[in-house]
Length: 125
Image (tube, rainbow, N blue to C red; front, side, top):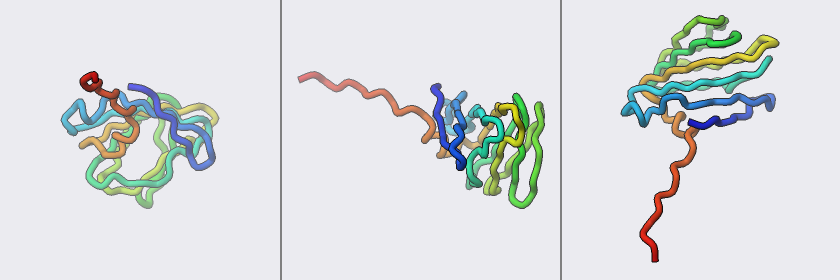
């Protein structure tokens, strides 16, 4: 899958890569990887109505909030964001962060990150 760049609140770039698309798992789950630059704000606070999200830090670290709790997620740690929990993550460090997020079931937002399907050629004139 290709990379998608999303501008954060302070104009830094978060790069997302869809590793396993929900369409490939029958909607059971989706796995996304994202890179947050040093001191990057990440995405604004949001929630996934029906999906749980597991966040695993592969490189660097993140700070975040889940509902009213502020947390730090260090290298090799895994955190669960329950369905409907308002959450956001940011990079408080001078080094980039790389994170895997597993959504179960797959979330509708993932579809917005996928490249558009290739056009199917129709019958010729």
